[in-house]
Length: 221
Image (cartoon, rainbow, N blue to C red; front, side, top):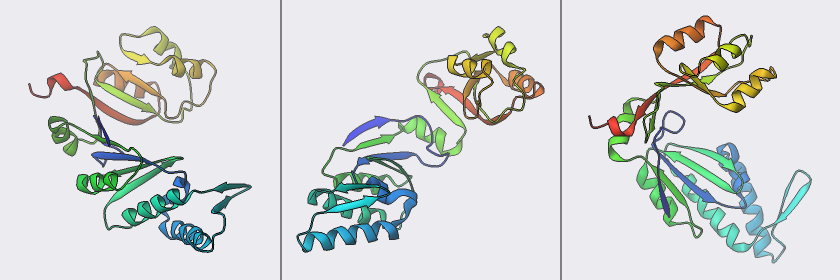
């Protein structure tokens, strides 16, 4: 298991994340364990009848190796435990988010393939537990807030963004989207301070989310 450092809460709730891999990852989508069990039982019956382990989805068929089936059965068993967690499936990666560290560590120990575990350092964890809207960076930047944009009704503020890099920082992708009047929902920009956020509101900028930026170097000060 490879360990990685994280500096934010996952989904504003979870401190830890585990990534495991499986070619059967999609059967666990939407945390539908009943449907996953049906697929695994069908494959197990085929294995016992010495039939090819074939799984069909839409117009495609996929042959599964017995060892893949066994590991997917282990994943199913682990996900069936009464633990609070969230799943995200991006085949072949299964991401499991939880505040139960022991659950995730035990999960990783059952996997034959290499897994990846993400957790914050102790000083970072203490801050995140009480402040979900915080992003911790290693190095200081001249902006206090990260803003996630929503759907815009007007793009009149794009010239202001171009002309005020000392007050806001917009990515080249965001500026390109604004110049072509494309949907910027979910795009990110950085604001210098509270006054800039108020100014953006006056310009009818739709803000979906505001995260406070904290420099890791300042945590112990």
